[in-house]
Length: 171
Image 1 (cartoon, rainbow, N blue to C red):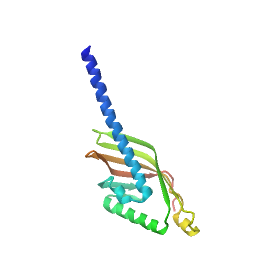
Image 2: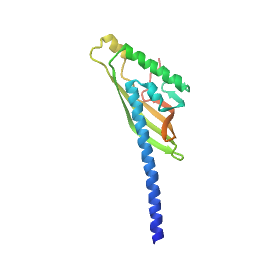
Image 3: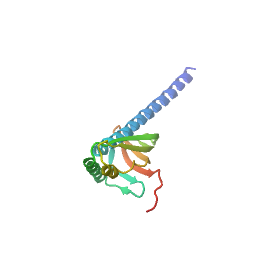
Image 4: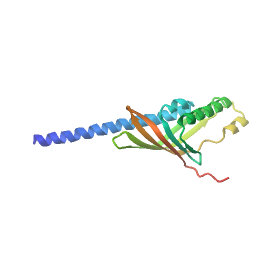
């Protein structure tokens, strides 16, 4: 009887430990996704780049292409955000990563996360009609899939795929 009780305790202990690790990893990945959105909202894309591997691959929606030069990609994005911020100051951004699904693979050192990415901006009231028009309409929501790798206890984005949720008309 003692042997059976010991076996059950060992199995329960292993399950709890594995589940605890899974929960800790899921929490860490959710925190990374939150930080990803926060850096988008703040326009600090070079800070966002710190969450990614140097060889991350990015695939964009609506024919935006495939980018494998991570350093150049983030530098271009930061330059675009800086230019937009100079042109129209005071725009506030809000990002929401909805319906998150995170799955761990292998020995727990790889994960796939997917979610719906909704971004909204709020314009300052002082903008004139021309500035409002230059800002355009609210961004369409997209679906994002991330492949993440855990190295040295930290999760890094190694692959990003963005898919449009809105059908674009051919021009």
